[in-house]
Length: 390
Image 1: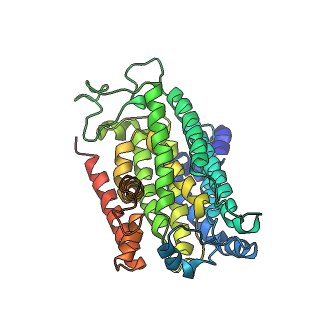
Image 2: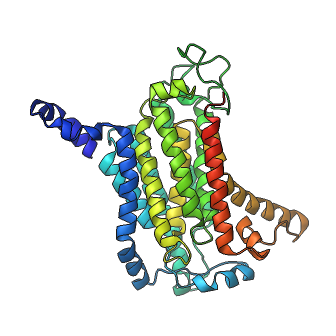
C-alpha cells in the first residue's frame, strides 16, 4: 500500500523535492526488513490482548490425542489457549498489504494462500475445540481428506496461475525450470540459460506446487507439538526464504550466483520478511512455558506459504534442505503409520512425531526444542553455502 502510494505520487514528490525523504521505500530490501520488524511488532504488541480474548472465549487446547502417553505429556498445557495463529496470519497479511507492491501477481497469490490456509486451519481448530460441546462430540476437527481437498485445491489454482506468470510459450523460461542442486542455471558468459536444464510443463509444475504446498503445510502442522518448536524453526526457514527471494528477483544477483532469475519475485522478499518477523514475534509468546499455541490456524498457513514461496522462486530443493527437521517429523509419522499397518501393530518409534520419540526416551522438552533449532540453523547455513557451489 505504501509502495503503491509512493508509485502514484512519485512524480509530484520529485517535482517538489520531497522524494528524497521517502525514496527508501523504493528499495525492496528495505521493505523486506521493515516488514519483518513490523510483523514482529504486531505479534508482540497484540499478543497479550489476543491471548486474553482467546482465554475469555475459552479457546484453549482441547488436549485431544489418541495416545495416552501424549495425553499425559500434554496435561500441563491443557488450558493454554490455541488458535494463536491468527496473530501470525494477521501480522503477515498486514505487513504485506502495507509494504509490498499489491499490483504484483506473486504477492497477490501469496496473500490468497495466507487467507485460504488460515481459514482452513481456523475451521479445523474450532471443530476440535467445540467437539465436547456438540451432541455426540466425536468429531475432532476436519478429517484428513477434507483438509487435503482444500490444500490440493489451493495448490492447483496457485500452480496454474503461477505457471502463467512465466512465458508459457517459451521453451527455455527459467520460471518453469526444475532447479536441481549444484547445477549452473546460466552459461559461462551469463547471457542465457545453460544447456541441459529440465523445464516443467504445466502439469509437472502444478504437481510440484501441490506437493510443496500440501507437504510443507502438513509438515509444519505435525512439527507443532512442543513449546516454541515450530515457531522457532519457521523463523529460520523464513529468513532463508527472505534471502532467496531477493536473489531470485534481482537479475544481477541471480546471474552472479548462477541461480534462476524470476522477474517480479523480489517482492516476495517482503512476504518472506513478514513471515520471519511474525514467527519470531510469536516465539515471544510461544516459548516455554507457552502462553498460546498457534494451532492449525498458524501451522497450515506458515507451511503453505513456505511451499508457495519455494515454488515461485524455483528453489524447492534448498527450502526442503532448510526444512529438513520438519521433513523428519512428518516422515516419522508416515513411517510409523505404514509400519504399524504392515506389521499388525508393531512400531518403529516409541511415538510419532519424532520429537515425542525423543521425549519418551528421556530428553527434556527444552533440550529437544533447542537442538532442533540448532540443526535447522545449521541446515540454513549449509543451504546458503551451497548457493555458490555450482
